[in-house]
Image 1 (tube, rainbow, N blue to C red):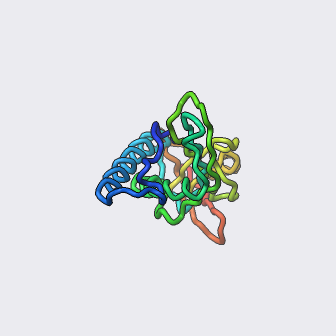
Image 2 (cartoon, one colour):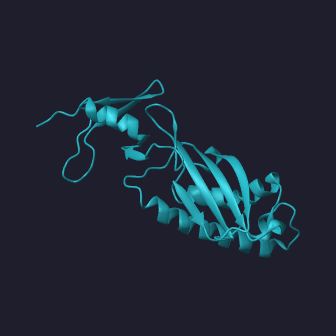
Length: 187
């Protein structure tokens, strides 16, 4: 899933910022709210979405010019409010389960200033990371996130059936780190 936030973290979110505590709290609260709204709008595009146990995130800062580029440590620290917004929006169960893989900067970008989050989720069937750059498509069945290849395999074996309400009729069990799907009794 890709989430684009049309703003950068506020200056007050940086650990090196020296500002009044009330101004810092207000700026961070507004940033968290803006990220929350962007994440919820993208989350609602995925049917049957459930909170992930953990996810990996790659962040790209689109900045107007080189003056806005900061080192990786400060960039990661300024994203704490965004991690909290992911938890508020129901992307993950707890913000401790978000792992920021990489932080990159694109100066002179046409969409500057903005943040682009690439969210990768593990497939419950095979364990590969599902995201925008991979070929896999994120599909939710019950509380499990499945990639397209696991979904096709389960359909071919007759374990999944799509009913008229476009819900999957199946019973999923999570055993030994793998998903076990019991066949649906056809009526």
